[in-house]
Length: 308
Image (tube, rainbow, N blue to C red; front, side, top):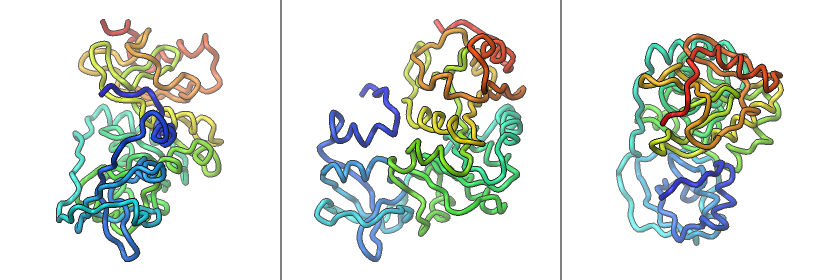
């Protein structure tokens, strides 16, 4: 299936229109007052509210982290109950370059801010580098949030759409009202208001204007837009917050800063405040079209043409 170029925040609307599924297969847990989703909520409640029938397997050992009400009994058919734990989601350990990037980026996160992190090595490295108390307001909730909590640096319960980790995260999350639908987690109005919101994301390529490609290279599609553009746009509107794009200056011997993106723009330049590499941070806020390329060219990567 070809990825659809859409923000995650648009998925609930698409589920009521051209992308409406015939059936939702889901894992749920049984609570005292009914069935709830387990390690993921995200777009699932939107499908239920669109009238999509649910075939739900009850996990007797899965975490209960759904912050919402029980699922409507008449919408759910339970074919089986199992003792299977959620699948473990793992990523490679952060490299020294990732740690240097996050040493720079962590200094940009103010105490008490709401922080969003993307999946993978950079998100893990940033949470390890944080030295001030923060709130977590993110689509993905990575396992490193457990360490943040153990260091006394997590304020309140995180807001997230799904868990991405292993047994340690699932045990920590069990019984906590952490997971919410996309209509909450990716709501730009909610994210951009109140406590400063900092979005920390990576990219496959960044061009000299600060435009971001997260979808792939010239040779291959690697992913979708996801929540990248939602969080970046919300962070640029947040008073005291910012949208940070973090990349290693090169990847597999190729520059991540290019003159022309290999694929269409995933996140526009106006939704990028700061670009961070292992060599430092470049602040693009308030800069015009002429100055932004000059600043990006000094972000630590050597400008290159788009991949052939």
